[in-house]
Length: 340
Image 1 (tube, rainbow, N blue to C red):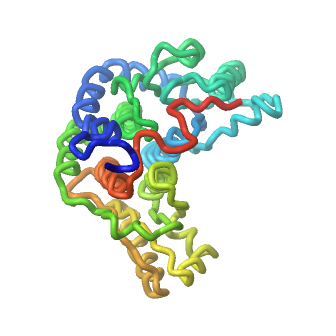
Image 2 (cartoon, rainbow, N blue to C red; image 1 turned 60 degrees about the horizontal axis):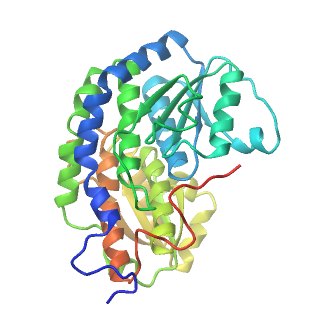
């Protein structure tokens, strides 16, 4: 009997929900197509000078993904909100001609709702990407783009996070009127199926004795690396920190001397060659690296990160079970965290 009290024959909620991602995203892309096209048109009319992201935890990491996506594809400057400015310091900032994207699973955290209200009062256009449409946040913003993934019971977000990335991809592709990216969106479900059926990239031996890890990526790889590091903390209880592979060389690389294991996020986009050279440098210093990579090379580079995450979620769920950890109920955490 495992300490987690999960029967050997029973799939965890985390595994079940992660494997639902392909079909849920297929439904999402179809159901949201008309709505996203409408919202994208309204954004073009608004013509924002900048984009601000509001979110906590995994939602904040989705904002980092959106940052790279919007700056690369649309050339518009982006930044992350500091909700405490509104809720703790009680300050209003000028957000005229700013698009505010609020990313949330529940849409119920008081600080996120307060930030949205202040943003609207300051002249921003507010668009929420969330799973629970019947929420206080829905009543606050200009538009809601639903994730369409249904209930997610495991504390560790999987299908909702992947669906957030696909929603961001659909929004940016429609905003830009990028026919190539729009067409490529339809391949996401089948690519995630490939990732589900592929061999594990992380196994118990890779993490069994590790208490501290470094996660490295570049660009969109760095963005999903932040989510990888968070899941290592909350599911496996391993202290993990994510860095841009370029930033890592500016000081933190000294950690390699302590024989820190490095998870290397490999995305075959414009950052690939530079990132590989930086990893070669780190390896030459004695780092022990484990590669997390897209299972197919011929994939639109903006979609490839989703394949890496899909496989990663299943791998750490399996490792958690092997270590006697219940991945569905990490100690000290709950599904909806409300902060002020």
